Image (tube, rainbow, N blue to C red; front, side):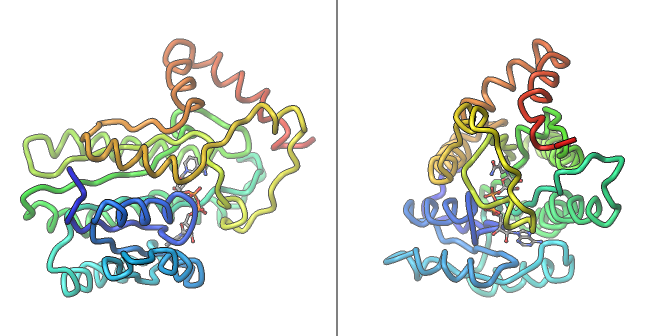
Length: 268
Ligand SMILES: NC(=O)c1ccc[n+]([C@@H]2O[C@H](COP(=O)([O-])OP(=O)(O)OC[C@H]3O[C@@H](n4cnc5c(N)ncnc54)[C@H](O)[C@@H]3O)[C@@H](O)[C@H]2O)c1
């Protein structure tokens, strides 16, 4: 779906890829509803909108709060009359801890934000999207949704759930006006670790040289291009493209390579 003059809602619009998605959509003359749990960072995003500020509306919302999302639909329609697309981007990672030692509280937090938050958005907005001439749902999964990373097993499970939710939704919506895309970013240079309330693990010099991260603005451009081309899968970054292929050819070999490469995440 072309985004110009459409109304698109972005979750997690206060930081990283979400912020850049908001700014990129505005640059293409879309009307944007940006939501985030973090008021200060969402205000910063609004401050970067420049002469497109009038096209942007922001709401402070926790996506794990189902009734707040139901109210958001009403508020969004009151403001713009309709919504044509939603980009479910808000997400967090888990503490760098093996499942055996990870507390249920941390597990539930990750699943509630990454999976249930995305699901609440979809179930709330889909009936409205089905009434639009054309509409689009974009869900941000992760390379970690098809490739196991030690110390991020529950994060990976939440993103694998987003992957299958999106692919199933795509099949269910074939023949309707609602297009569906799933996004698999590789490593993108954002503050997700800090924003998830975690310390950034020290990275060995050799690894930090080897891991090339993508700028969030580039990631946003790839995502919106993919959305405008109605792609089924949007793969973001060379690392994700390579691992997507490697995982199909040799899933155990791919898992073993990542396990060795990311060993530093789990000292001891
Ligand atoms: N950065 C990466 O390398 C990477 C790789 C693959 C996938 N992803 C995924 O991309 C998405 C964006 O990540 P990012 O790296 O830009 O992270 P980020 O931390 O920069 O941005 C995420 C935003 O989501 C918001 N958020 C968190 N919990 C929320 C909640 N309950 N309700 C509303 N907003 C909430 C945060 O406040 C933050 O502004 C996430 O879903 C993440 O899992 C990131």
